[in-house]
Length: 534
Image (cartoon, rainbow, N blue to C red; front, side, top):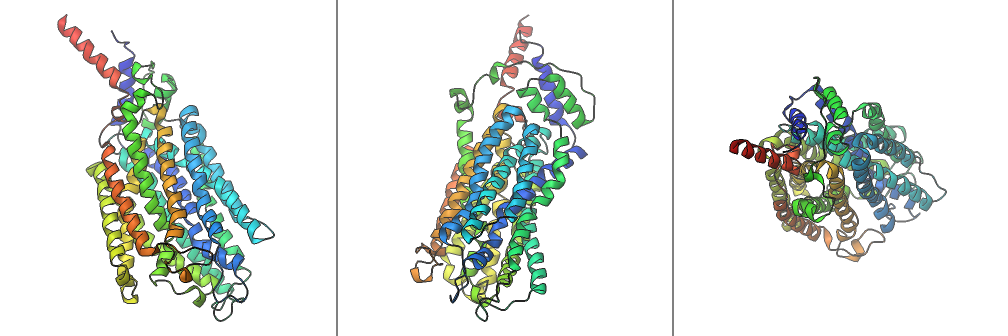
């Protein structure tokens, strides 16, 4: 006979799965989402200011072109936060399963707030020391951001009911779109104010006068603004109770789980005791884990890795793509602030028309058509549009065709976000056992950031002109923008194929997906058979 405490445990979790959507769910989305707003703002705003940094610190007197970051410095500034994020995803993912989601959640936010501020206060007596200080603080900023990935996804998954779980997790991630949009808007506002206060001539007219001394404040203000939204939500993060599923299934504290569920559901729940099931006796990466979840982890990690190669290549180097197709004027025809304003305006337009809508279409459809189909659709259309841009590249770089290029380029962002960029975040929080959930999400996300690092470093070099005379200063000849887009298209095809390793979780409970209720179901069937015989 099974222990009669097994079934009540399932009943408590079933109540959470069947609960109606309440105000608490929306508050959790905002509290968790503000972290992702800050995450995306901090990760992507650096792409807005790298050209400005090059002008301020690396302009050579008498040069016909304004300065740009040397290859090694550009790679470090763009990629160091991603390296920190990868480390943070692994560490805080593991820590979230060991100590609890709530315990670790405030630490990541404090890191983000502190390092956002210190990034803007980067100091030094030489360009090298300023860049080194900036990279140091951006690594630890990324470390905090990394922790937010597995913790936010896991917390939202474990609080949600199974009917709308996908939408709530996707809504947390969708705040990333608003963070990208905010980065562009803050850069537009700050550059507009400084242009009015400190007018400057184009570099070709007055090289020295095109970079007013006050411009050094601009990039610092933009970077430091990322601390504000995170700081505003710190108190509410600390007030969130531990997720009932962690308390029940990992900490094995039935009384505390019922207390936490009562807070979430606003109902009284009778105290339940929780017992250890044989179904939860295997360890991470054990033979049993690999038999049950090995292919799933391979699928979530590989899809995220491949997606982020393409996604971060596009996001971090939009300014280079816009310049390559002639949508931005040549650098020497603008002042430092003019260039920042026009880069920010272009990226804001892409975010407003392609990035943000894609996220929210996913929110509205993910629990209707499912994660699997959305991911397939996204990878398919990202591939298709990148092939269109690559094969017709000579057509698109003609000035009269720039608008068409931007429209198709924007659609690749739409289908990234109404596609794998959202689903790769959602699914790992749903398909693994509670005691490994944060760790496995962190592993999947870390593979994603490894892909982002490949994209950030690889695309920087690969997209350089094939003619060495036309490359940016200090860079070797690359394969060109056209061939780089072809490579990204092929990567998306591979991602589409790996999607078939990922199970559909729409409408299923977390325990059903992770098979944590398997032992109880088997025991229940055995009891019914015994009763029938008797």
